[in-house]
Image (cartoon, rainbow, N blue to C red):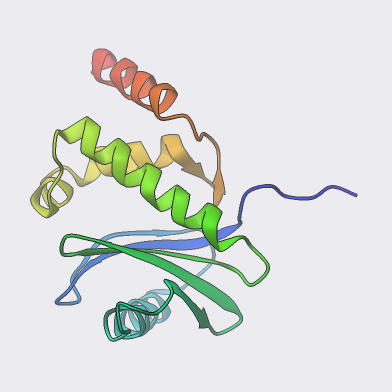
Length: 149
């Protein structure tokens, strides 16, 4: 029997406290109306939770795993049986790579360099599955992409 080590990600959202979606990556077939509804529901679920509660929320037949960094909420939607801690580690690694790539990343970096953020995300997660977990490898690949430009 083949078992998955990494979670199957349904979508990833980066939202600020006001509800503006700064990055959305969908790994499943959602139409535009459904995406809008999901982003609103996720924002409501994540921002209204007491900070002393765990960063895991049941959502429909999935699980939302989120983490707040400064004014941004990084949210992953995964299957119910996936490991929450590995998802939190994935979020943290993504933030570390962003931080190192942009040099103390802020929300405006994500807004004005969204194409780079998507490239970084694709080096890390592809097709809803985590492809690489080594920060130096990801950063080396990004440096190589920058050299090609």
